[in-house]
Image 1 (cartoon, rainbow, N blue to C red):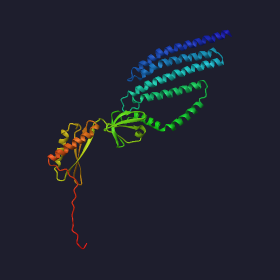
Image 2 (tube, one colour):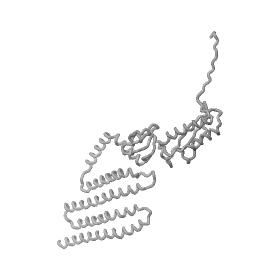
Image 3 (cartoon, one colour):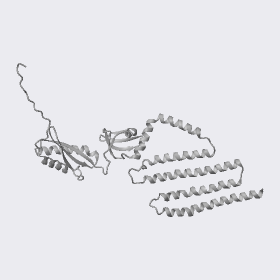
Image 4 (tube, rainbow, N blue to C red):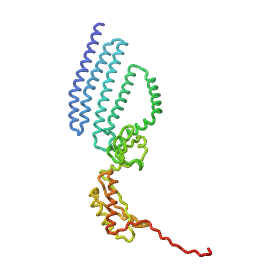
Length: 347
């Protein structure tokens, strides 16, 4: 019997030594081969993955060897069960912490993508990291409880009830929160953009938070809009597109009988002399329609930024009026011809 126990102890020791040797071989040789292969790729994500896997894989091999050694020692049902569960718990914890660590690395890596439509924006990374850590920790704790034969159904039911209560009590806050997440991820606008909300609120975006967005209007009034409202509203991003320049339209009417070519030339001259008008794209003049009182033209120009629209309209309207007045171009106004007829005395 003593000889048998001695053999089992030796086998347990050999299995533990074998696990240590295998752990060293995997850590040194296998990972060295994989790193050479990863070095040939254009991305460094695989290098980070291999570097982060070295420790948890080595620890897992050693712990599995320890589990087998405990099994060979035959310590008794009670002690063996506790020992094996403790080792299983360590393995779960090792991989839980690795998943939390590498998920943060992965989120940061994906956030470096130059794709403007990427979901992993820098401003949303802390939230994604927090949600990932919470999810991984919850799954890890679940498996830990299951390892020790703990009944988690009661905990899950309680968590579900609490979640429903919180959801009903804070539905508006949660709506703003989720809308904020989608705004940060979808990026319909960014900080500094000039936006128009439901054709009413117009200004520059100064803050994008999880609960609200702040817009500074041209009157220097800050409007705080809940994200749930923005999520259900029509938004015009005047700073969107390939460049930030903004097109301004100046509507002009001239009297019937005016020289059309002269009107075009005067409007183009006004645009060329205004310092706020961008040279590219070039200014344009369009003859839009025959109005009730005159000929309707439109001068289309570009300014550097959307917030300059009001000042540009003021300067151009002033310059157009002075130019027309100087060159004898009449600006029409509604006219009515009234005919008076005499009525017979009998009537």
